[in-house]
Length: 300
Ligand code: NAD
Image (cartoon, helix red, strand yellow):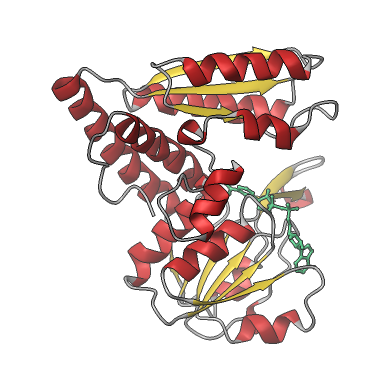
């Protein structure tokens, strides 16, 4: 293996440390405690794990954490009423509605109901537009975490060729906007892209956000490229015993690590950065809401 490993777990801990320092300063100097409200509808086990983990880390950095766990059959009107309450609550600076929502709820309407200033997921159409036009916005957490890893490893990204595989609203598109904002030459590849191998082969930076286990092999990668693997896929692992599983990314780690200059592992790469960036966005939102200077290095 020649690639260096981009340790998202360690980097995320550093980000959380910076957030905690800033939170302590806000409390001491301004009597302010940033607050994050997470809304969970239904009992999806994976979502419950994410929400618990978010709550624990929010408290650990000294912020106020509120979780609203609603029944799976909660009506759209009741959910919107809760969001309205949270929009008006001065102790809450960030609101996150855990996705996916049960099928009877309209995700677009729910996200649009969140005050854009409190939209710490960065999914509100206002924040999407601000990001696309290069203005100050709330930036989606996963792409923000990827950008931080890239800047930390590569320094300036200006002029580099970047290929983002995947065009989702939560990862692929905002990732491409962020790389463009840092003056990369950006290509967005997707399920209809012709000759993906050739597209990826010219990239200095590859961000894979597809949701297909180990689909990017080493022989697609330009030697020395930096590879960010966003994918989280659970696959069978018979080698660990009957019925056992393991997590893999969208990148074939073993072969890509032999060619790339640097690579994020799965788990322990992008995943931990996502929650760290959620906390960073909440402290940023609190500062903006109170007309205070934003913490350095925690936004795009
Ligand atoms: P999505 O399903 O919304 O989008 C997948 C994208 O991949 C689509 O735009 C599609 O065009 C593209 N695609 C599908 N097949 C393709 C192919 N054969 N070749 C090229 N492109 C193809 O997924 P998403 O929400 O963007 O998530 C992508 C992956 O990232 C998933 O594994 C998800 O679990 C993971 N994820 C991880 C984090 C994290 O914190 N690490 C956060 C969000 C998503």
